[in-house]
Amino acid sequence: MERPTRIPVSSLEARSGGTITDASEMAIRKILTYPEKALRTRSKPVEAVDDEIRALIDDMAETMYAAPGVGLAANQVGVLKRVAVVDVTHPDGEPKLFAFVNPEIVGRDGEIEWEEGCLSFPGIHVDVLRSDRVRVRALGRDGRPFELEADDFLAIAIQHELDHLDGVTLADKVSFLKRKMILRELGKAREAS
Ligand code: ZN
Image (cartoon, rainbow, N blue to C red; front, side, top):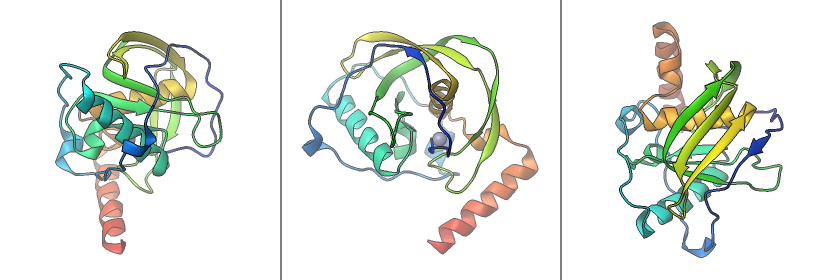
């Protein structure tokens, strides 16, 4: 997810899913843009949080920070596994990275509308209605289960990234006509680059 111009303070009761330990091993991966097929495909659950998954998480975090963005799902870098990273503090605050493996939303409450951007939709912004609070259950980078209660912008970013894992993008949140307009805009941007 793209960083908005205004970041509200998120309150959370959380246990982080682990931290990055070895920066020298990480690599920036290419972020796919819509309508690339991987972005429209449902990702498969991770069977074990092994070294390959940890390397994927670390690469995704580095890719997200470099973009710069506040969230990234594995299928955005072409890996169809249920892995996402989020850090809504970036780049102004103290880093607080969450890694989610096989995440599930187990509770939600309230409604909030937000103009969202996405690293796979450069230059595009779409108003999306989300839950204002979510409780998410996942495995962390250490393979251990954790639950996180999030609200406001953190809740929005989590819902945005979890949508990606189901092959759902900003293009699915708009009308047919707006989707055609988005495709045109992204095509123009690709030609220009
Ligand atoms: Zn996105």
